[in-house]
Amino acid sequence: MQHSFECIAKIYNDYDVRFGIPRQSGIVEEVESKIIFEPGYRSKEAVRGLSEYTHIWLIWLFSETEERGFRPTVRPPRLGGNKRVGVFATRSPFRPNPVGLSCVTLKRVDLEGENGPVIYVKGADIMSGTPLFDIKPYLPYTDCRPEASGGFTDGFSGKKLAVSCNEELVSGFDSGKIAQLFKILEQDPRPGYHNEPDRVYSFEFAGMKIRFTVKDDVLTICGIS
View 1 (spheres, rainbow, N blue to C red):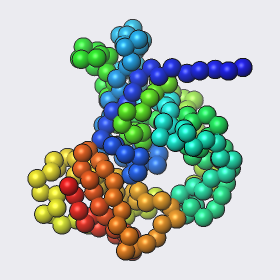
View 2: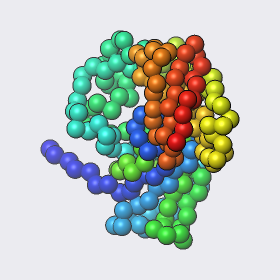
View 3: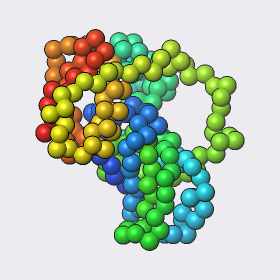
């Protein structure tokens, strides 16, 4: 039986490109996103009671990778990109159905603003403009499982990079956006199998183009424009 899904909303934030987005939701809580419903779903009744929750689930489309199709095995970044495991043992985007699942912090629901209701969240790991299929409340009594095992991710210590940057490079830019940028960079946005100290990486965030290198667990910003 064939099923189709409708885009009910799109999410907008400062993640301009896929590279550099946090690998999981909740890692960079400083970045705010707003969810704008498609015209057919802009209903105040549909979000009645939502503001009583602190967190929500977003079900969304891996729109940037959906054309690349299903892969039975993938190389998780947390394993250095050198070991293959089954796609169903990971959160890789290369799935039979390119659907993502993210838990985000609900900040507020604006019922009266332009295009309302508009939902504001923090901690998303989703590129700006991504279609959403559904929104569901996070329920602590059933969604939180403290006894759960994290598989191969249990060995990940959460180590962060030190971010180094000349003050002259960030002068003139919004200090709040720069602080968010540093939080993103300390998570190490490089592919897990990259370890090239002389390589210059680049990505875009909040309208800025950032270039950086990484050596000995220190990420050095070498250019912002």
